[in-house]
Image (cartoon, rainbow, N blue to C red; front, side, top):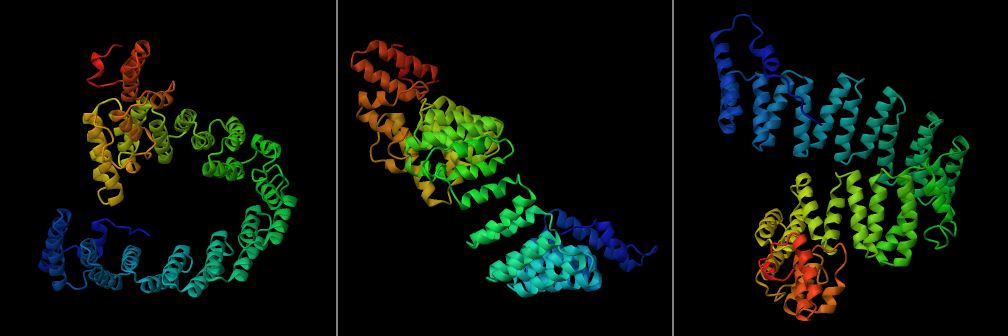
Length: 516
């Protein structure tokens, strides 16, 4: 519900400028009105309120002044006086502008019954306007008068006939009150009025399924298929009612599901719905065998829907939850190439790049993410990690401070970032993990930041080398690997690690003096 504001001159015209020749009193009132408006525009709310109240002392029937006074009182947080002023204005000159604003004030004050009564008068004045009925019913629902709200919807239905939106609203109210018989009858009446609309039959079937009335749901889906044999939703619903051994939960071969995924006439979201149980199993168990099975299906989904970000994101999730981070990062990159507006994909990519020690890309995508989502503390956090792992602790701390400002009202998040700030300090001076709570560091005790800090004070060649892979661009980690190799007498290996650290954009002051 929005208040429609008329131009000041339109509001003023009936009361201040209607006469060709104005009396001295009217001229003074006009000057006072303009002065009051000027104070309001300058943000001097209290002064403007006083001036409008002065106008009303001399001209209590001045409805534009009452309207402006109501607006100012509301802006100042004085809802009750605003309502009183606007009720007077509306009584003097009933119009849609005043009514809409008065309804907004009733809503803000929680005076739902008053709002319903207001719209009841508007319905009487203009019974052909559907919006007034809908607003009246909405206020009644807020007032928890469901029975009267339904009566209003039925009155509107008498005016405009059976309507899908009205049916949905009444159906929802009946469901909310537990009257499932009437809820069912509403949908049945809609189908009777529009027997050729398959979507309305889907509503009824979905209602039956929500009530675990599988027999009735099946009958409706069979009706739909007699009308539309190619209706995929009905086909899938009937399959769900009698799952085959090859379904994801059944554990057999996935030939039937693969055939469904290969169909170009089936909606992508319906396909994802069929895959979801298997994806959730992989997420909860991390089972690689299960993940491989799911990946085969997801790759077919990607083949059939190459331009849809959701298909790429599913591949990323399956790789991620089966601990194949490099492949997960690649799939998330592909997702963003198709659609870069979904923040959770950005955050998942940044987390994956961090966990996989792809620090160069962590900085790259962190910077890109900031351009699109400048108010997300996690972006600053991951970007800070990217800078820290090349030894730029000044930039890392600056980014971290931005994240800390954003989470200052969240004690738990603020404490975690405090631990990370201490970790950056220990990285900078080479003091290792120390007393830092590794469980509060990004990714936990087995993630790159905690692992690197432990390795700083007690390096293990076997542990460090197990972390390396072709996509590793963690400059500080590579330098430490070089140090361990050098200490073991493997000068050639050490030089290779140092070169890779330089290529990864290292700003470590200690790297310059090492043989690379």
